[in-house]
Image (cartoon, rainbow over all chains, first blue to last red; front, side, top):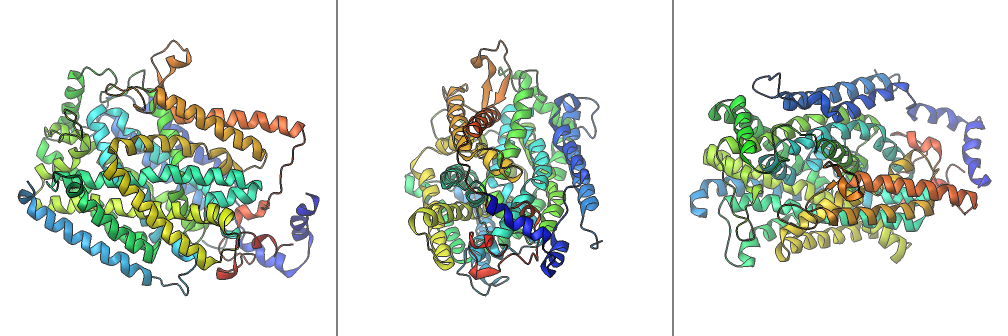
Length: 91
Length: 549
């Protein structure tokens, strides 16, 4: 066990050129922005929002147009989080 | 009679021929230096960019069966069938969070299947074998169901026969061609064909959702017609809105299906074939375009109600085959040539996922059964060869399922498939975040979830059947005094998790051997160009450990 933890420690401590060259390709994904992604996971699963007929839009009962509208919610949230967590220097 | 549908059959056949040629040519597309490697045959060189991934994963997740069965469900049950929309919204943020880690760790270690990951992470060949077998068993009926999609189309075109052989001959030919080009081109074939498939589907659906409401008196009338039909039916659980009893089922089914979807081997194959993390992340923002399409396709079920479509008779006397309503709607409302295009879209739509699924199942067999138990020192070329042959066997099996067994059997199995694939969630999805669970506890949890899931599915009755009547489990069978129902898969996976967690505490206390984790924290963030990744042909799953040490 202990011997197996060794590589990780070694890699962090070693002042070798490899450590600096590997750093830029490592994504930093511990961003708090990721929590935003729970919005499009939770909101579409609450029937109280969409389970009704009125108002109708273009003849669609609320049940249908609102659930289709959640697609926009999903797209905008994932796009936002992607932009906010993108690696620096790629913009 | 088929003569009445001659134009449709000609258009269908021409488009089918076109994609068959593309399937064979695909071997030379983005040609690899050496096709005799599982990374090349089974993952398209792990080098697909944004557009290809979009078409590939879209073509993979939204199958022909979906296009036929979701509107059929709307036609028969109403609002409950619309679960496909929230389900395919919820899945993308989940992939964005979870599968991206799987991509990184697989990129770093050269994993081809989710079971490869479990093997290294938990140091447990048994757990890996269970994950592999679960994946194969869940995928097989899914492939068979793609054939049901094609058959619904052929049936509508009048391409049927008296004898079993005559009735199934077109399917057998279609699958033989599919098997041949998948054998030759691997994942490149469905990736290339997906362009045609999705373009056809987008065109057909855009035309359908603009032209059909215009012909049928507008969306308002379509929803009113559906409402009138469900008001008149005696079934208390249909209707254009949910009622108090099926909301819990709706939500748990949508969430459970989303969790199951990204655990399916074919979705993972699609994700692992992408070039880097950004390709996946961008795709998770762009793939919901297909969900919009799926939502509109679902509403074809209501259009069929408004248009007064009567489904064709089913396999047994007196039953009806609701799966034929979409093809019938097209036949009734569109000019012949355009109906032919629409049928080709469904038919080709079956080929793309069938190819990817068979590749995914073949990879699981090769990596986690053949290499693990039969031939430890298999070279990459041997691996690729075994995978190619297995993909053939898998397709023959799928055709045999449809020809020799009642198609209902495949539908039941697919229902079970969603529940059983969910049982790999603790090992695969949670395993990407934590190694807290003990490997033995995960195995026992899997057994518990599997057993409970099977028992619950067996208990579900439908108006026509006593067992395996659906995935909506009545809570009263657990002793609750309520008419509410819940999705079987969610209950089973919660029990699986609870058992695994409790047993982990016990095994921890007993200081049971946990094995060695072959991954390090950094692996889960590795990206394209990571210098620790051994390139190409010399790589195998274990060697990745060494360069670091």
